[in-house]
Image 1 (cartoon, rainbow, N blue to C red):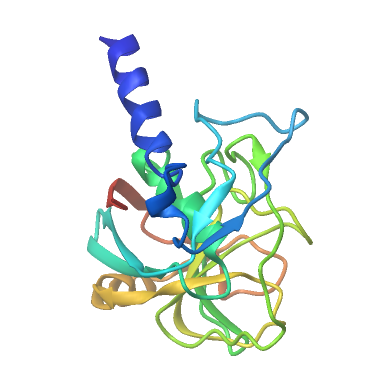
Image 2 (image 1 turned 45 degrees about the vertical axis):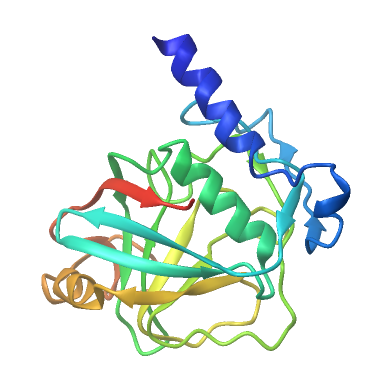
Length: 219
């Protein structure tokens, strides 16, 4: 059964690669570079995404938190098609299922929920990294979903959702925005923060654990 599931999964991921037939020649694509990180192996078994991403259309993903569902619309035609392609791949492989969001901030500078790390803040990625996709003009208003990173070119599975605003440099690849469920994130913020981050008392772990029970969509 596990082998059958694995082969089926590879088939789904393979479907993300545009066929080589002449009819597909006009499909807009961009090449992506997903580089293995042997010193930082995958926290959960995953297959790296294919090396090409679509640059047309949108795709919806729903994160089913213990606070309720939050649906995001990812923009393949935006500035970060490889980041969108990566998130879709991780959702299809159930990487985010039964994971915890370790960081919540609500300061004058930064109001975000940070998720996607399996073990703790910034620890537990997919075993690979990929470059930033930024234009330098990015802004991060309420409802934005963007990639988190630990420096240039270190994107993996970590992402954040802005619940108020984020006055930060344009260093983070914007994938799209929340289209339903911001009230669930507002309730997380209202429940408070345990200050565990050196950036200040309004930055740390959610006072009540925030968990992604399942992520769905992405097809």
